[in-house]
Image 1 (cartoon, helix red, strand yellow):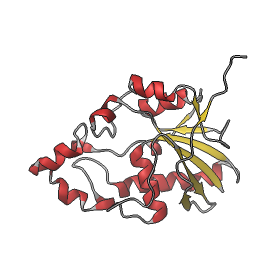
Image 2 (cartoon, one colour):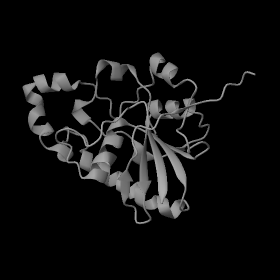
Image 3 (cartoon, rainbow, N blue to C red):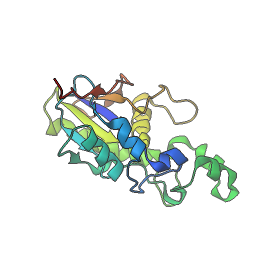
Image 4 (cartoon, rainbow, N blue to C red):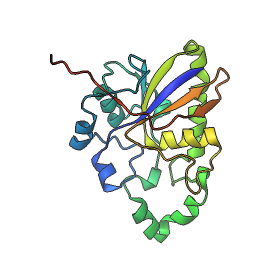
Length: 204
């Protein structure tokens, strides 16, 4: 069994504006960096190896959490929002040409023009998780710095949530969420909402 502490990147200007930022390589905002100052992975994951999405906002977050040389993992990249990139959900819902209502009703199969569906994201994540038991001994703990869309997809895959209606757990995006991976690559989600640690003070 391998345990992964899933941590979403800090906030960006596009987060503040409500824009979908899938593959757009947006850096953390000053507020996002400040909120992560002095933060560390949750209890039990101190010194754990770190896997990180290739996007800047995730790599900056990993660095602020104290990871000097994380392993960049392409499977952890955010969902590709295609033609919806940079637009807000409210804007898309108000635009008849976007056909947003019909697309949202597809749940796991929502797919923006030119982009990915959550089901496609889950497929690439399953492939990555299936490799982990061969790369790490049982009992290994990892940290994965990734994205909201990725974490939601893992929640859906673990609980069979079809991404319609309310999710089965309310997630705090400033906390870590534990994913347990079995030897056969199957996985379970939880416990969620594990608080990040604070780095020890260097004074005194």
